[in-house]
Image 1: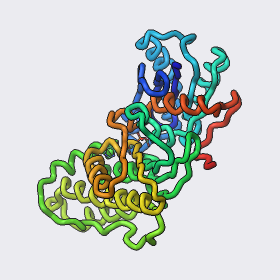
Image 2: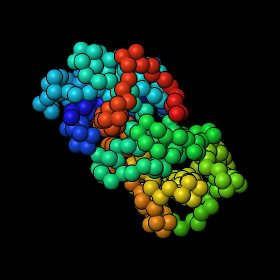
Image 3: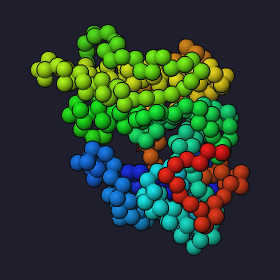
Length: 337
Ligand code: KG4
């Protein structure tokens, strides 16, 4: 079964074609990073306009590269939520047109579930329930996933998302946008031996039955550190290193809690921040120590927003008969079951 996935929820326009929910046939992607970098964040109007300008070209390229015709497509899946409303509408409209014209099923996909579920492209043995950890520019959240289209939030952020914190702190440190890869590289350069805690532990007093993220305090701590110290005594790589360590300590703590509180020993992590090698290594070690199964997309391109993950989840929802009507609605937020 050949499925087309359309992703336009934020600042990546992407088309993926997948066979039987596990084999990638093609992935085309336009990243809008350069368009937004002057503003140090995603500008919604620029994002939707850029999706509109690129999406037809990306679809045509995907078909050309794969050697497939429109008539080879068995279904079309599209990100319906969460995301920027104007951006989601671009992908949704293309999906509606394709479904109507080709008379193929239409599947509306939860972007966050698609991020987690994409590990099925690399690993067949994923059973329910699992704990899903989403770490991206827009989300820091932990879910209990009980089935396809059936996931419930068990921990969320009360302010900034982790990727957002990377981006904001990178701006403070003059490391550029997007901040994630820049901070990771800077932190890797740090060879010193300053012992943590350089910045205070985050949510130190969080009750033991609670899972929560919060990163705005860490961003402020970095800002105060920079203001308090004179420029020539500040080692940017050292600050980046300690920012990263403090931020990841909270991820580790929340995952450990999720495993303990739910008793589920099956964890999947995804989202742009999971492209970070330091985080991957750290969480791998935790999983070995606590003896739970831990998966994340090995291919870094599958960590960030992409059409393949949409086509992949679409396949499993289709198999369960979870289809959308042509009049389905897109939404900026998730719809919890
Ligand atoms: O999932 P994603 O592509 O989409 C959005 O949420 O928009 O995540 C993008 C986020 C950005 O904030 C970026 O700085 C962060 O993921 N990111 C990273 C790394 N690569 C991307 N954060 C830390 N380390 C990285 N290597």
